[in-house]
Image 1 (cartoon, rainbow, N blue to C red):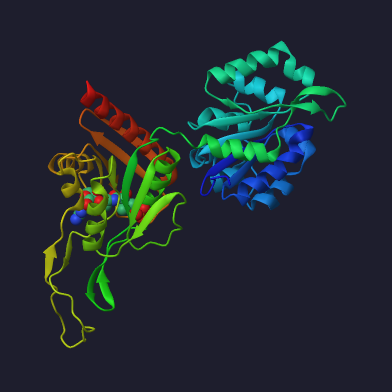
Image 2 (image 1 turned 120 degrees about the vertical axis):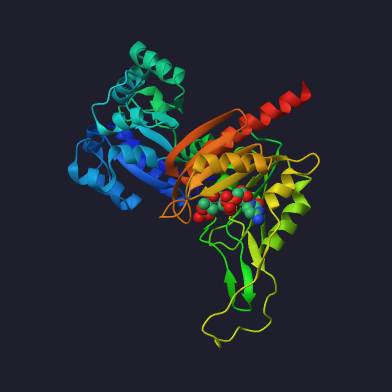
Length: 404
Ligand code: PMT
């Protein structure tokens, strides 16, 4: 079973008889949960119509670099930012040559230059073209730049020849694409994550809560799973599918989240607190529904425990990562939380005015003792992967300092 749920894949189709196989691949990627947008080169359009890919992807197909209509829907830079990965299948000899030499004379080659994300290439061409020294040189250049090359396979070719140059089977391309998301940088570590809001009951039907959707925390959980960690997710009430391969504990109030976290914290290597935890709860919860008797009434609140601070204050505390949700003075407030909560790292985001809470994208500024990094506006899934990479780096550094 491939793990492609929620992955945004930009499928590049270039000119060659194998272009028709990209339609099968597209169906397979979508079947396994990926959100796919297709970019076709002019050569590809000679073999298969954009309409085929449009019908199969359910999205407009992108073909032109300078297309005003397409630019107003999703411009090429936005498309490059949207994707988690670019998969080019089939990749022709001509495309490989242009990509290897940094050309940006059509939409696909421009996207490859503009995107700072992994690129996978599945070549398909006549066997002599593949074996030609020029193609082999281009191949080496691309590999050197960290581009993943999958295939080609050997066998009978459409032109009647036999040799290397066949596009890998769609099944193999899909499974290798899924595997490329598995980084294994946290293999063997136990990661505990909180996500979503907490709810503080007022009476049997009402509560105080916040706008957290859980999207950020769930994305972090999925990124940690893909990094090979053993993940436990403590979730407030959200409307999201449970990540596969995570142990999920559903809670409602801060007291329940506190109890669930504390029962696992001592068995945890890394704690990531992405939940929007209510700071206060009701001093007493009314047993009956409160009646509308007076023109106004007051709720008396008491302070909740700070779950993150309690975890980071433990003896042998896990590597502790907080989030800071700020409407002003982002850096000052985040740095203050990093120190007062004795954290190893904090991810600060601007919230309010449609930012941070209950949206698909976010921007994070990450602070730790000796550094900081800005993660620009991007889908939360992508930010989560970058955050997990940073956490893995700092966690490993802290551990290696301990052992020396
Ligand atoms: O869920 P989404 O819709 O995707 O939105 C994501 C998000 C905006 C909720 C997320 O990115 C985020 O910022 N989460 C933290 C929200 C928050 O409570 O921030 P804070 O600055 O109030 O708290 C600082 C840290 O202390 C947080 O890590 C929080 O989890 C933790 N905390 C706070 C209070 C408390 N009683 N216990 C805690 O553990």
